[in-house]
Length: 425
Image (tube, rainbow, N blue to C red; front, side, top):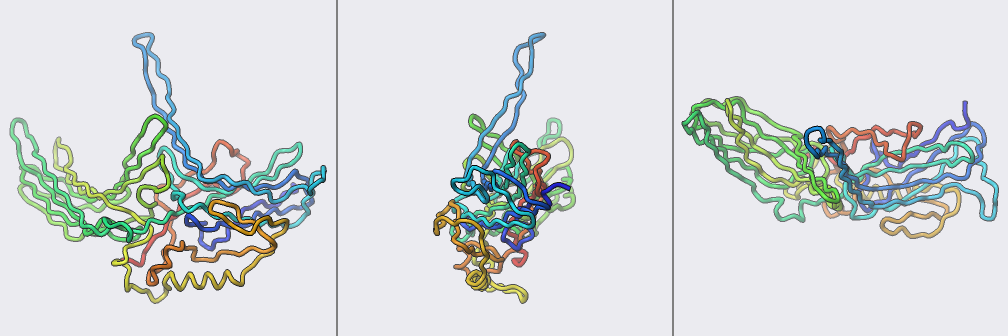
């Protein structure tokens, strides 16, 4: 058995996974448990947030025997913060490497996240990631490293967006050709009561479909679609993905169908536009689609929506659950906990302040945030119930990057989590 028994990064957050809002203090401990004393140059922690975009395209040039194919890489990146905290090092004036004692050694850290950073996001050609990475630097030996991911959620308050309560409707029609004859039209008019929603809500879809052709329609469906636009330095690429749908049966020829407030649930998702990120953009839509039989393109009516992280006041006002408390009470409980909860922090503590994006420096004690972790924006909505946090569908990734190797410790199979309001049904 080696000297290192355990090497961990623990976040002060009681959620099943660490979720923080932009502008909040992220804090935790680095745990080094040793079977015997270990000599090292030092222990450092890196806290990083960045967006990256990358995809490749195959290009052909020449012709005949001189034709060849080459690969073109498209990249872009954006750094939000990168802080290094020295947790353990040699004493000032000493030339000898320090010796960390055997047993359990705990080192506290904290950083105030910048207030305008984007939400965590994982996409086909890039994403926004936040992580903490600790490294034991050993003389003349391989370093020990451990890495842990955490989710950041930016606040998008639907109540400050006037268009969020606007009714949304659309209409489209097409003619179906059969040899030389034009049949139709096949028409669809669809609507939803408003534009703004949060994960956990139902979008109530209504539609009037008229099939004035001599063909049946195989089915009609309403799809929740996300279109992600990735911006490299010289080119953009958009990807469309269906993340949920409801479907009806076939529509006979010369007949119609009516949808009345059919519920389409919004799954856990990052807020629209990915505000704060300049290289990735997210847009959401409800697509009502009718599929005629035979060789014909589908008829589609596209309705834009906004996904936020704080629901409309008109939706949650007055709604209470017996087993839950509003955010205002939860925040008061949180402050009461903070006022008495302290933890000794070994080592030096420089300044007392914690500017946005800066490292919180300690003078002997640190305050431990308690759940529920919520942003200050929630305090103006006293009857808003706290969300749960659920994993985003189809977003499980291996969070290793080019700076990690097979020996990097930590849970690197990672799925972002987002607020989910299962009490707004």
